[in-house]
Length: 104
Image (cartoon, rainbow, N blue to C red; front, side, top):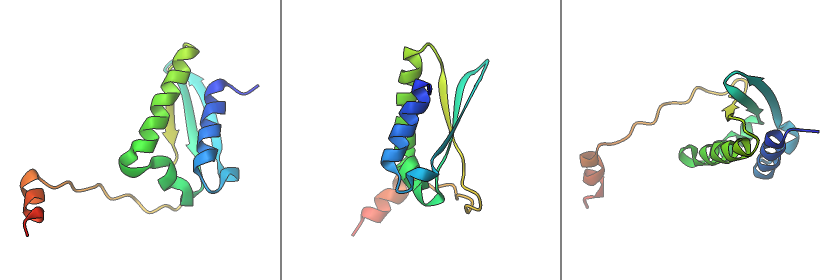
């Protein structure tokens, strides 16, 4: 029988991606709690992370709730796909720069 946290993550992840057969979940338990490591097809990374990381944050929040029901602290690590280009940190504009862009 799979643990509830793995079942939940498997269900949600496979519902979001285009390549559900490529979803791999590894579960480890240590003194810090439960660590779920998620690997998906590189083409599906954007669907799992979401805009500004919102989808990943939501999945992590829901996993904590699932963990609380089972008296466990659940964390999620999303593996970078092999050969993926390094992500550039997003440069955020100052308020003044953003306001300047709005001027017509």
